[in-house]
Amino acid sequence: MKLLYAFTAAVTVVSGFPVIDNLPPDVHLRAAELATRTLKNLEAQAVHPHQPVKRQSLPLPSDALGLSRAETNCGPSIPCPYFNEEEQKISVEGEYAYASPAPDQIRGPCPGLNAAANHGYLPRSGVATIEETVSGLNKLYNMGLELGAALAAYAVIIDGDLLGGTWSIGGPQQTDALGSILGNGQGLSYSHNSYEGDGSIGRNDAYTNNGDAHSLNIEKFEAVYAVGGNDTSEDGFDQRYTIDKFRSRYQEVQEHSIATNPYYFTGAFSTVVVVPAAYNFVINFMSNHSEAEPSGYLDGYNFKKFFGVTGSPGSFVWNKGQERVPENWYKRPTISPYGLADVALDVGIGYLAYPNTLRFGGNTGSVNSFTGVAVSDLTGGVLDAKNLFEGDNFACFAFVLLQQGIPDFLKGPLADINNATSFLKPFLSPILDKLECPELGDFDQSLFNDFPGYKYSPTGPATNY
Image 1 (cartoon, one colour):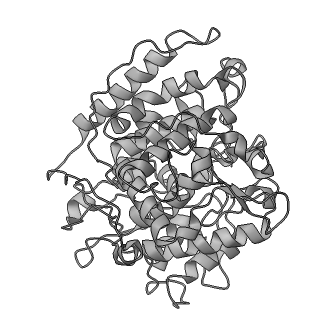
Image 2 (cartoon, rainbow, N blue to C red):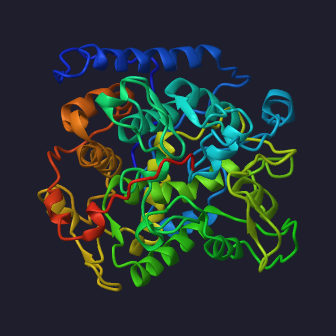
């Protein structure tokens, strides 16, 4: 996949953004200025003791399964060539000491975000701005600045407060008088088929759990925990997880969803990109790094800490909202951030290594009724199963999926695609401008209308979780 890492902080403000009458006329310019300021400020604040490793254009491999099995916990194209204790040690003391969330603080479906909030790397309220998101996740996990900015901006659009520039890592955030214009953003806990999707590593499919896809299913966690080995001790130090083991588990989870969820659906950005990327994030962001293993390792101890789980196999307990960063935990080296380019490459390798996981379509109202939709039909014949992974095609396809899906999940005055994509554009254009994309045009998403899971969108109650 020839997806380049290069990302410039100097985002150009694009003029001529369309404006909807009942929104302030400067919304889009404010978004562009925010993208520019966020990345410039964070680049200026970043401390880089070493020059960041430059990514090269990388073709997807002919032996994807072999690469998947050989891939380290540092990522597909980024070496972790050294271990620096002072640079990589993550503080869990002082301002970053662990604290359980208060009743008025929000937590949600992502253990990595919950842990970040519980330690103050994200606002402990569970509601963050784009800049707070980028800064906090970079400091804690060494998430690439451009990845944090794009994911946060998308969250603001999908389930946040566009004018306030904030988003919730869990349930609905409180709104002021502007809420009557924008609506109360439901947060990640209720972003089904936009951010959250079927086939999660540890959560239920929404339809099978009365709309709740944010609570950990302890039996599902136990199944993924088991792929790391046979250590049944409470510590789990001998359990070891790799990205290939998680990719194999993802295939099993998909098959289970097809067999148990009559509304199982895959085809949106959330299920084609975000869900498999979330499996990869566990490896790439939660692995501990050491002198002996500079590329990182994830054992059962660290896995459970980040997921808020205690006990030993057969008697696991999920401690809701208590996800935490382990003590003596070391993040990725500064020169090896994990960014947008790495997400696309890792997801692409996973699909090539386990081709049965790349599905478009869903069950049609009963279990085991999965009906597929061809990529060529979605893209008017521009892409198909043979050329989807050539050049930059898959990365282009993923970004178009993201933008095409926005209107279906917005309410009221924000349902206009021009408004939503205009806000997001400054955060994506530095990446898209580096890609050689075919002219895809509009996807024929009407092909998904016969799948009940495509339109299923549970509404969250007035809760912080």
